[in-house]
Image (cartoon, rainbow, N blue to C red; front, top):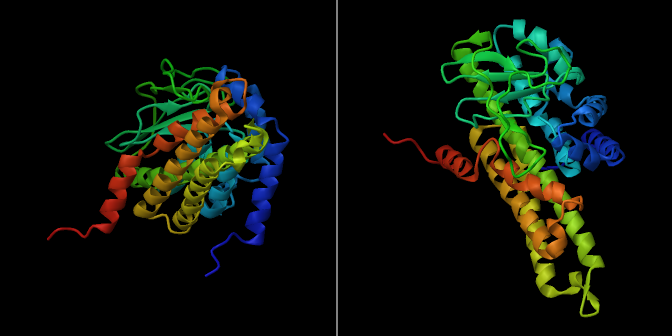
Length: 345
């Protein structure tokens, strides 16, 4: 079996990497953390031009189909570049709307999401109660445990104007390890879009996609951290030699690389076969690999790694929140165990 991306998939990833490499992403992330979403929205539009967001939308609603593998490849690049914003949540919301039997919400929201003209954040039962970047997203969707899908806020919902800024009724933001991840409780009530068992089923599917794409983001973050740490280890000298020439440093970097490379095929396998256990294994492996890459980067950079002026800090602060987003390590381990443990009779 040739378990590698096709030439077309690789070209898509390279195109996205080239675009992000010239987009001054660190500056947009710092602006996003300061509450200025303008540069981030401009970057969002450029990313949408590659067709990335259309990969989570069916062709019937101006997308190119639900393509988890191609979308995962793209989200690795978003993680590598450190892109801020509810990118995972927008894709998961698109999947949620696509899975509903009632096509009215899909017709209303999916074309704008596919074109990147709008964005969305999302909360689902069993996940975090906090919505990511509800003050900047166009729409804020929530699914209740009883199976009610509501439009509860966002810059274009609950009385807002599509594409405009504003809190849209979002609660007071809570502090996060990553300043570019603004979390808030979505407001109660809102417009009821759908209800019933189909919403619960659609939410389960959307949750798996969110977990998969977060795993892909973690993989990209880990790659970025390792790449920057290797470069620094070649430049920094101790006792007249680059620290990268020391055996202990080589071992630490090699262990970090192994963690990332072992996580990669799990992410691709989950994208090809997004069963709950497969997705949980990918998220667990990629999340832990990314976090270990952050710890390695911090140790080998020393005190300079703590400084906010260094771009490395933007990725360091993402590793822990992304590891826990859409499935903590313990939750993912439990899901993996459920998938391999035969039911009792």
